[in-house]
Length: 334
Ligand SMILES: [Mg+2]
Image 1 (cartoon, rainbow, N blue to C red):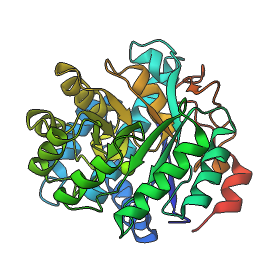
Image 2 (cartoon, helix red, strand yellow):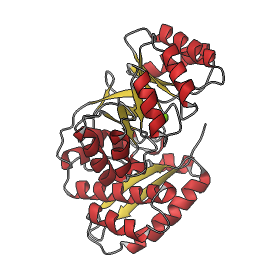
Image 3 (tube, rainbow, N blue to C red):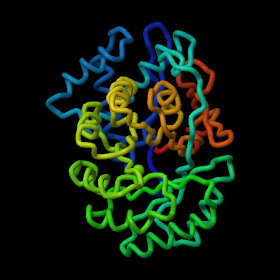
Image 4 (cartoon, helix red, strand yellow):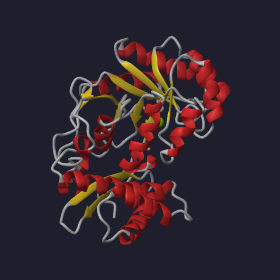
């Protein structure tokens, strides 16, 4: 994937407060479908109080038959995030503070690159990703030949040294037996976590992999709604959980999902949307790692700043999202 549409939402209340959010839409058709649902859903809530949990309940009922999943889930999440932003903006507090947290620095890894690539290129790119001040990077593996995975991982590890954390993401590419074998191949490479080795819904498969490997298993960017966090935790399917604010149900869904994870002491990281997730991780009892990507930087006036491997929620009202009009014009897809 070299390009993807972002969808920006400005939700204006009758008092004139604007709540903002954005979505990473993966495909053009996704952006169009989500925009269509947002348009209809905002008409359904016109005149309601800015009470995100109540709005989420109502829209959940209105869209129950269509199914609150996929693009519908993402559309409703965008509205939920914008409503929380509006509340925090109206209170003149950063969202993290509004949620009862401090503006604590969150550990962040650079996820801006390291797609499937040959060993030498991967090693060079890993070093480049550390330059802005990170001390952790994520590498995508799942090459057809498992020896290639090992070669890429060992070359990257040798280049970055032992003090840098190295996460590995398979994006659901493997079968369970292969995932166990590849995990064993990598066990001397000090891998921080193995992410989504197999199809995300195969919780029995995950539990088997987690039992066999000492390297922690990371799962969750595809979890659909907070209830699904319970399923993963109950099945002991993963050591770590990673929530995607658009798929978990916005801020409301994140808070519920993070509470379920906290009840079992499972560390929670974020997937994409670092500008939003940094506030949510600050308010997450078992906060772990922020996934940093710069993919929204071109449409923002003040992109997030990393300092010694940490990113702190900005001390501005709400999420602190300020659109760059010039950037938006440059990237506009229509
Ligand atoms: Mg992933």
